[in-house]
Length: 319
Image 1 (cartoon, rainbow, N blue to C red):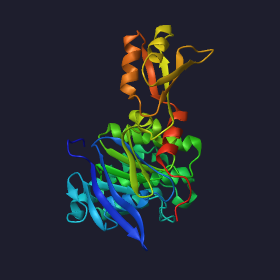
Image 2: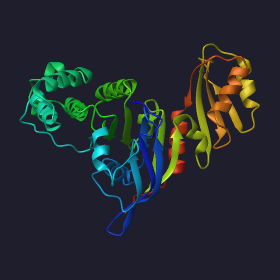
Image 3: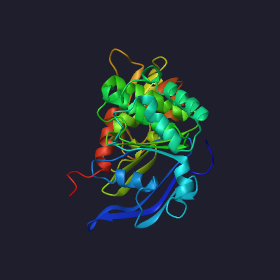
Image 4: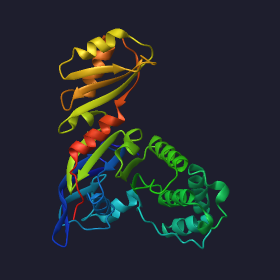
């Protein structure tokens, strides 16, 4: 369900463990209906934030709201809107897939007829219908991950909180999981997905929040991330319907553009290098259109994303 109220609104969130600040005045919004990445190095405070939003951990300061419901003063209303899948999840491995989902649907107060429909729907969505009578202990890691996601969906939540859902999956299972998440977004759900790998989420998410050592370093559109890096050089990948030499000339003339490099064998593919923070992606795209180019793909390059992440986060292991 998409509304004008943010799915998540976090303000000045604070929490600490044993004298160490895990979260220090964390603030960000997640628009309703978005697929939002929550990225940071190990130990950045991602799981702590997720637990606060999921009403599993009481913050020591600040507020967190889920569709306007405060997670501390009105946790019951928030929980009804949330489906939470932790990084390390336990499953009743002696149950079949159907028994496992039926158990949780019953826990949410659904009658037998409603449970049968719910289970059928979530198994179809996760492409696990043919495995409904299989024991969970006999399933692969990827299939168990799908069952866990199906379990999250049995009460039809509006907000999905997924902590490292692709962890341990092979490339095919990872791609298939990401397509399921895209389908959930198309259904109107807000998907909040945590990961420590920015590139993993770059093609999936429309917005991202980067957390480092308990503080927010960036929160906004993926397309603007590269230009918001603290220092260094930003890079953008541009693919045109056909090569237009005037595009490279126009881009090179923009203040802040360092160089434009077309691929030797595919001149319609260009990499645009800019001074970090000098230009928004929208300004580059406007110059492309003004020069007569027809862009079919425009996004931060993997190199640019890596550099932005390195610029915005701190080296070393947090203790």
